Each structure stands twice: as C-alpha cells, then as structure tokens.
Amino acid sequence: MSYDVAALREEFPSLRSGIAHFDSPGGTQTPRVVGEAIAATLTGPLSNRGTSTASERNAEQSVADFREAYADLLGGDPSGIVFGRSATQLTFDLARTLSASWGPGDEVVVSRLDHDANVRPWVIAAKRAGASVRWIDLDPETAELGPVPVSERTRLVAVTGASNLLGTRPPVARIAAQAHRAGALLYVDGVHHAAHGPAGELGADFYVCSPYKFLGPHCAVLAADPDVLEGLSPDKLLPSTDVVPERFELGTLPYETLAGATAAVDFLAGLGTGASRRERLLDAWERIDAHEVRLRQWIEEVATALPGVVLHSRAADRTPTLLFSFEDRDCQGAAGYLAERGVAAPAGSFYAWEPIRRLGLEAGLRVGLAPYTDDSDVDRLLAGLRGFTGRRFG
Image (cartoon, rainbow, N blue to C red; front, side):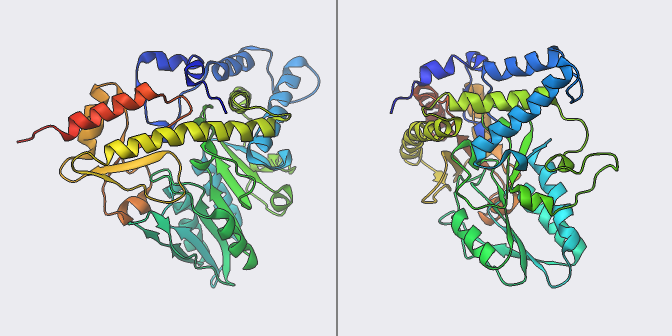
C-alpha cells in the first residue's frame, strides 16, 4: 500500500511557508484544487437555484454534487445531507427542534469526553424542556469513557466519534445499539472523527462533521436518515420549502463553499483506488491511517521519554492526536517555543471543556497529524520538544 506524502504536499500551496503544521485538529491546510473550485464557482455564471439559465443550473448542480459527495463520504443518503455554517450551529438547531417534544421525566445523555458543541446545546435544550441530563464519565487515567446510563426514559444520547482533545474513539456502534434498544436517538459529533475514518458503520441517527477539518472550506455537514428528518419540524420561514433536507437549511446556500467542500471529498478519494468514490475513500483512509499511525507512534516514543512530559492520550483506539502536559513547565510556553521555531502545535482546552476539567488541567499541548505531515515535520517537532524540556529556568 503506497503513500507518496512528498507528492501530496506539492498540492498544498500553504506548505511552502515552511511551517510544520501539527494544528490539524483545529483545521487542516487546503489543497489548491479546493480553492480553485471555490473561485471557479464564485466567478462563473451563478444565480439562485433554478433551471432556466446556466447560472441557475450551476447553483443547482453545486448543491446536488455536494449532497452526493457527502453521502459517499459519510455512508449516507444524499437526501439526508444538510449543509450548515458550523457544527455548533447545526447542533443547536437540531437540539432546539428535537427538544420541542421533550418534557419532565425525559432524559438526555451527554459525555465528559466531548467538545462543548456536543454538550451545551443538549444541556440547554434539556433544561428548557424540563428534561434531566445524565453523564457518561471519562476515566482520566485511560482516556476512555465509562458506562452509558441509558434507560427507558432516555430520548437522546450525544457522544463524540473521536475526541478533538485526546483522540479517543469511543465504541460508538455499541453505544448506538444500546441507545436504540432503549428507543433513544444517537447524535454523533464527527468533527474530529471524519478526518480519520468512515462514519457509515457507526449506527448514528445524526452525524455532524466539518469539512475544514479534512482539507475543505469552513462549513459543516449533518448526515441523517431522510425518514428521520421527515418527522422533524424545524423553525423556518413560511415561504421556504418543506422538502427534506432543504427545510433544515436557512437562507440561500453559499454555492461556492459547497463546491469547495465537494472538491475536498474528491481530493481525498484521489488518494485511494477503487471502482466507486466510496471505495476510493475507504482505501484512502486506510493509506492515510497507516501513514499517520507510524508518525504518531514515533512521536509518542520519543516525547514520553523526555523529562517531565506527560501524555494524556492513552485510549486503546484513538486518532493520531496527542495531548501533552508538562510537570514543571507551562503548555502555553511550549506552544510559543515551538512557534518560534516554525512548528504549529497549539496549547489550550480547544472547547473541550468537560474533558480538560476531568483531566485536572487548564490547558494541554495538542499535537495532531494530517495526511500531509511528513518525517521532517516530526523531526522539527521533536527537536523543539527536546529544546523546551531541556531549558533551564530561574
């Protein structure tokens, strides 16, 4: 299974800056073809959707292409693909819609592992509806989730597909089965997960992701069974269509952004082989994973041998995302030291409010790998960590 990272890097103009990017969990760099797709759509004939003129047909085609691409990426149905400005916006919108039928005695389950975008919308919605919130705990020693407190009163379980802070991949398919046996829905935050593997087998009723985490533009996508969406009535303008999935998309869509998001899927598919785009995507994920796991293991081995370095990413199943802290040094200081040497590895809580508190930290240094990360990037990161941990203070 070949993987030519040098050739891949040539497709990313931003990498000519010389920065070694380990900030991909917060957003990846963008290949040239994505920018070209955005520019071509925006500067070509373009109107609101319709069939009368070429400009209307171009807008219509950008929407159809987007839905087909993300159905392939997420293993879903094009009629269940909803565009959104951000995953946070989509989750708040859906929480408001779903909670309209909740009331006292109902329960919502959220986790201590999740980004706050998959916690607070549900907590707020439950409070407004008079429903109760139950928590899946996080073991700070193993970075794994504990038991899922599902009961016959559970209406929805919200859990991440992979932690943006620790990389932990919870057993989502098992959680889905547990939720469905209780008659509950499962909402999966796939914003970090989608960059590192397929979603179709997870069993989620709703799966949200953000293309800018996997080489695309800043936007978000919700995938759901169209039949489930048909049963929901979101707030919308009176003249706007009631057709699914359009009833969940407020206002005119940014057709150029849709085109860029589609181009990102096609770019990823181009890294694999297969008869269909879905098959090429599955093969590409395998190739990318093998490349990233090798680099992740190398970083872990060297970094954890340095004095005072603590690795918090310890789950058995995880993405190539590592959270470090330092016994006697500040994480922000580490990020600044690395940045001065052209290495982008940020420090913070990254909106993962619940897990960072459960770990007993205020911040951590996050190191994330991407398809374009190469050995020279890792060499520079490790040299920077050696220099930082070896400094004398005072």
